[in-house]
Length: 384
Image 1: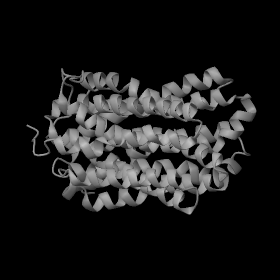
Image 2: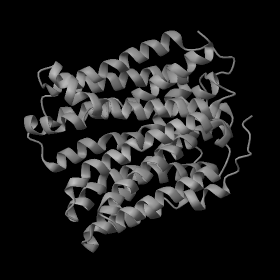
Image 3: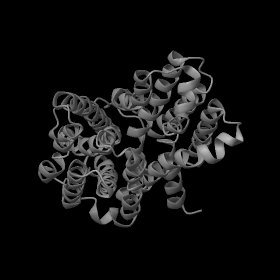
Image 4: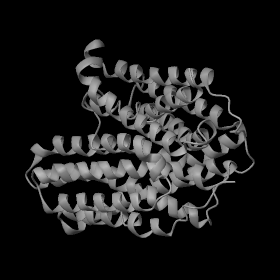
């Protein structure tokens, strides 16, 4: 097989692994809640832990890459995520479930900063396209457990949620093995580097982090607050369609980026256009509680997926190869941290005003960097 095809296939599979174990929980969450007698707070902690780990372990992930190299770090992350995900099915109680979820989240947090330098090494002439490919895999990986667990996987295991979680951990082991065996041999190194700590004083790090963080925040917070907003407006019937639109709306953007990534990878206008689309979607949500709310949610998903694919390519495009992992790690730390902070502020705004729509004000403000910061990034800057 052509070398580039193998690289693209491995990147797409790895993208799937970034989300498969996380999204294996929602379809069986009601079964877990009943079996382990979980409170609402405990459910909130369980679903929020992976995002916390994405921010907290990104920099240690950069250190691991600096010590062993990007591809070994990726394989280690895959195996840690697989072990943690599988062990969730054996957890006797909530504490064990938290611990195994932390292990799974840490593995994924290690994988994320390893991918930008790998894309640069395996596809140096097609960095934007390679990033779009693994982002497409990520989005497909989000949808598979949701689509297949209830109609196929649970019946296969007599409605046993523990067996379901173990089942969705197995692809990660297979992907780790395939990456280890079939990794392309590149003339461009992804070897260990002495530099691993993000340069927190680098303006480029903060600019890229705020751009990626804007997409993370609008996506995750919209998922979190949209159900409560619709319920408070007496439209609980729209929660399912709106959440489906928000998440399925990501896929068209991902496929569009597969065709256009190479043309758009060093341009400010796609980020600005995505910001306008996402903010239009947020405005549509707070002004409606009908079919337009569903359409508006789809706009947010579409825009945030496009920003994510383009932003993830920027470290490999803009800095020297030895700095790519630490820049990416800093982006994940700040970007996911931003989503967590804004989520808390949005909830406080709702409580203070007593009106659910006010939760979307901080979310909209968090999207402004796409309009205000992107124009200040020097996209002509070349890695060397």
